[in-house]
Length: 182
Picture 1 (spheres, rainbow, N blue to C red):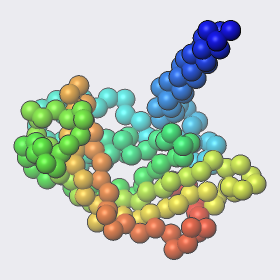
Picture 2: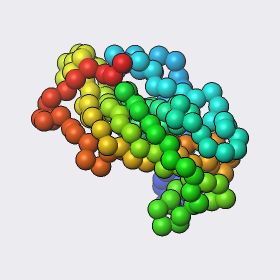
Picture 3: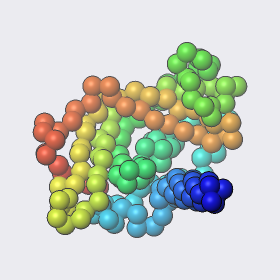
Picture 4: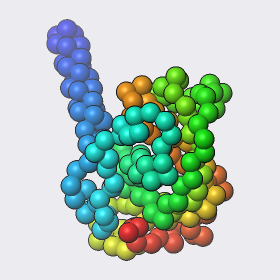
């Protein structure tokens, strides 16, 4: 009888683990799904068809903006939509990888890293449910006028960019919610 109980417990744990793996493996798919912004009353997150250009040398401000949008927009594991708008990016000349400042798991340490700076507006939105979360009042918007960050190539040769303003502004009150970004 004790063996049955242990076996049942092991099977239950295995099923729970399998379910969790399927759930977490499926979450990133929300980034590229058509109409994924609809439950938020928002546009869909930006996606990048390819992240390979430029194959060599420095990336342009336009490329940095594209990769930054693709990296910073999407639906997180808690079901919230992240958006960016009004993005302005300036790309510095490349510099060698620095283990003290560039500790990103998939960075290609043989490639140059490009510091970026600029400004952007970020949005963090909840699903509109019509009761607690109302359409047009479901996003926290943050202006980030002095954002800094970096662009780098991954070990697979894909470009990634991110930047944040460490002093970015948040709504004055936690209930000061706004509509999604355009």
